[in-house]
Amino acid sequence: MEKHEETRYVKRTQKDYSMSFKLQIVQEIERGELTVTK
Image (tube, rainbow, N blue to C red; front, side):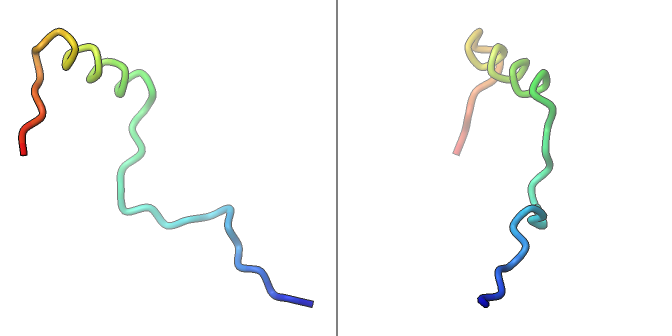
């Protein structure tokens, strides 16, 4: 029998933001209040 690694828990290095926060940022970008710079 093969041993499978646990895939339910993945250590994240990136913060999980709430959906409402993400939508707020998207709306600000669409209105031109925020810009993406490189």
